Length: 213
Length: 182
Image 1 (cartoon, chains in turn red, yellow):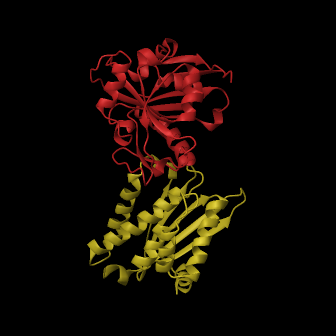
Image 2 (cartoon, rainbow over the protein chains, first blue to last red):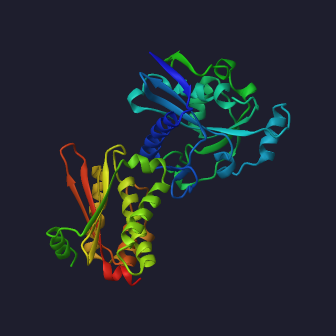
Image 3 (cartoon, rainbow over the protein chains, first blue to last red):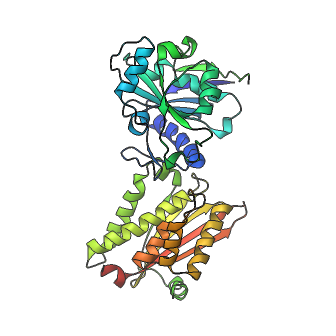
């Protein structure tokens, strides 16, 4: 089965991506969204600024968001520029202050689950076409529970670098747990994302690769 | 009082009606829309009061609480729900209708049973001391505040429907004299 990957550009496509994300995040985690307001106790999250989505027969089958600035990790993870500089230094990268972006809100439409789309949207969300359309070579940030890093990112060859544990907020009560806590991570695309994923062309039509798990 | 008033009102034709049919997902996507809609309803209704500022403040709070509840407790966020305000002269009836699941219907039913056994103030303190977690087992604090602080006569009904879900009807009755003197 094939799916079409696109960056949501039009107002209509952005609404389609947001609708799928809102439906799933509200059902699973009781989260609501806002453009201009957030409150992690009241479970109000800020919308990402950019979206990639996969469609099958014209229907949105999966989507992911990107904070282009004001990332979740910086706002709520209590990460600052020094934390990022230190990890870049350890990796042998320049200590320049580059833009910070954050991959977030990866979802698969329940109607299309079991096809392997989670791997496809994870790959698309870590493509240069999505992360770095302007050539600014950003730092990619991520907040995630540990089990997902192990079962999703690492299995696809993406190796996020842990920055520090993510503080505990009410909004994550149905997402993380003491047994599977959240952390903040830094991804240096040239080092931590396989070229086969980072160089994936979007827009494009792709065969869904079934998981070997 | 509330039940009698409600029965009497159901026999009357409202002097004015305003209704919003909505898809809860639209409000989930932009939560600030709840406040915008509540403010619009409040401003619309406040024209019939002398003390418009006082009326608008109370109405906005009550409409916002009922609207947020209808959005939160809708089990299918793409299924249509409604917010209606009927003005009967002496009474304003603010009503929401939405579908929910058995667990949330039971929580709302428990809230009504508790309200029959205790005052809103007692129940509010009890639930503050021992809150239930998440909206899936709602503590009902927002509705209790309406009853406790705004003299709202509250009715909640959950009727089972054929597909296994429940039709939820929430009505907040406000006496217009009480509303205006705030």
